Length: 523
Ligand code: 1PR
Image (cartoon, rainbow, N blue to C red; front, side):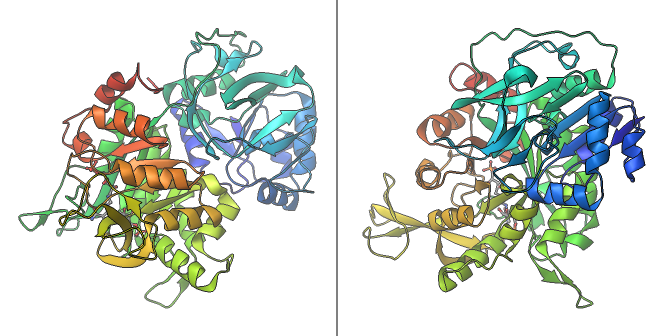
């Protein structure tokens, strides 16, 4: 039996699913005694250092945890579960960590996008039993803005390169902790979990082919989900957001099955967009929560869910915070939530008042679960103008002239699934959302959606040059070359497709094989 410390953090369900998929049973810690009497303890954490330590103190888990660590029994910390072992963090000045390892947690101070999100490799610094069966060139999934800095290297198990070199895991006897998420790192991650669970496996030190590690460009599979007129929840796909064919909602398959297929085909992430979420009450949208729960049982790559995340009042007049909706999605297996229409309204209000309320969905969810857990889904469309100062929005000069030869355009934001245009441009939206705490931009394009004409490179370039958080290019992918163009022509860290995957026109494997000698990808 594995003792499992769930302090109410984000997506711990996937760690439990990972352990149970390996045939082990988990007992969730409920008392300090459960920690003290544990034989093996797993401590995963997603979110913010400050709120984690606050909860551990409130639950009086700090001293039992320190005693357990001193006992030298098997311990696996994941992400914040690693950072908690240190003395403190720049993320929460003055808040004490467990202090089991001398050193601090520091924010990345680099020119690359922060958070560090995606698949990166490991430089192996000492042998460990968690590496049995690990070849050395595998990539593992990271999602964090802070990294540990031990005062001496004795505890360092692996490092990873991201501009500089940072510590990506530690080992002191049976105490092992990783910054990366084994439960979200596909079969390589499950191997690490399996090794931790089996204390009899031997210590090995894999040898890496290349000198340093590199962050891979991510290929994301997107499932636009909605109910048919008969009420069945299906994956659909729009042509410029129009999902109807001969009046009926296009039905391209069942969400859980398609997500499983894309996992097996090598998708680096899977995104579910509940495209009629703006109409529904997400917490009453049981089918969508069920899709997430079922998917996370056997899909071990990151899951993002979007659609309808906002504060709302239900039929009985009961008020719900977006944070409650997000928490339910995280507990159901999501790693990130995507906010669409609500983000546009929040930014409009911010630009009007010029001040942060601290109560917007972006601010509240990122404060509790960390920036990296909040994605902003943008649904823009091109508006051509005669000159760069024709409108008060951020305008670009375009190489694709308008219907009347216009050489300038801006990207108008929309809400409610492209149904309502707003007086706001996509670049400004992305920049303000970053200031409010968002960790990633999902940049769709209504003009290119479902066209197979390729990504709108000018849009992706304009937005990815304008923010320092990662950008996912989306809409219009028709072949593998389009991915090459967006990864070499813009700063986008990821690229998403839907139609070509649903219609089996270009399998994910073909995209990766095409890219593999050109840009860094996870194979
Ligand atoms: O506004 O917070 O309720 O969220 C609603 C979410 O649903 C938003 O993220 C919005 O992007 C999405 N959405 C709403 N309506 C539609 C629609 O299609 N009618 N789909 C929609 C957005 C865009 C991509 C699509 C790519 C790739 N779909 O996600 O998958 O364009 O497609 P392609 O590769 O086939 O070109 P809220």
